[in-house]
Length: 284
Image (cartoon, rainbow, N blue to C red; front, side, top):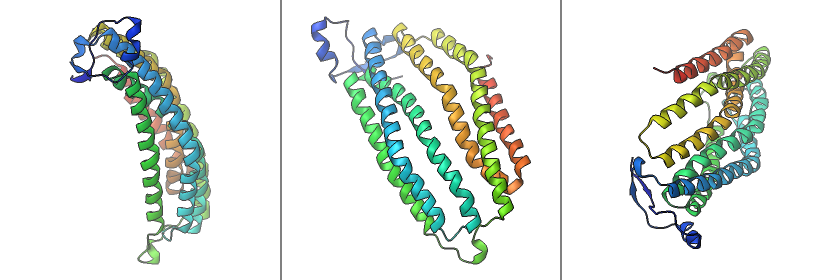
């Protein structure tokens, strides 16, 4: 693995300001990862997690209402959807808008820690800060604009004939809403629960493989640090992500196939997640 980083022996404290600057660096491999690289990586990871996590939280709290508003407005402006289907989608979109900031914050925190460690160890903690700020701008600047533009484009689509307008019956709308709530609870609790069940064995497996590798000791320590951070975030991410997934899928399955079938499919989602995690944690 070729990565850009710096190589120094541990310097005196008077050189600390120089370390924090983005300096010239050389190629290194896993065997030559230094303790200084580890220190810079950990500091960069903390900076990255705080900046990306906070940035994701603030941006999602500010921009999620706009995206939610645009989505609801787009649904009601759309000529491709009937009034009953519009009424069914509205509470689902509003609920998703409330859950999304939580998921964005957790994901931002995790991504920022990994990105900050990579950037910090390869360059400097200050470079990790710059990278994280740029990531926040990219994710919540262009991303929000693209989502809003996509929603508006869909809302202006014209049906070629009345038969192309999507509509459901009132009874199907009720089934969809009830199934949406039920599936969100099943997928959230179920996927979060199976993640919690498999987490100790998964963490042990990752740690064992890490310490069996030929990487330098400082890089192993850094990997363990990141693995621990990932383990802490795994369950809440799985729970919130599963709930958000179940919210949308449950609404669709509910009005298409009925509440009972929707619940069965939500249980199947949990079973598939359980099997995938079981396969991962098993040593072969």
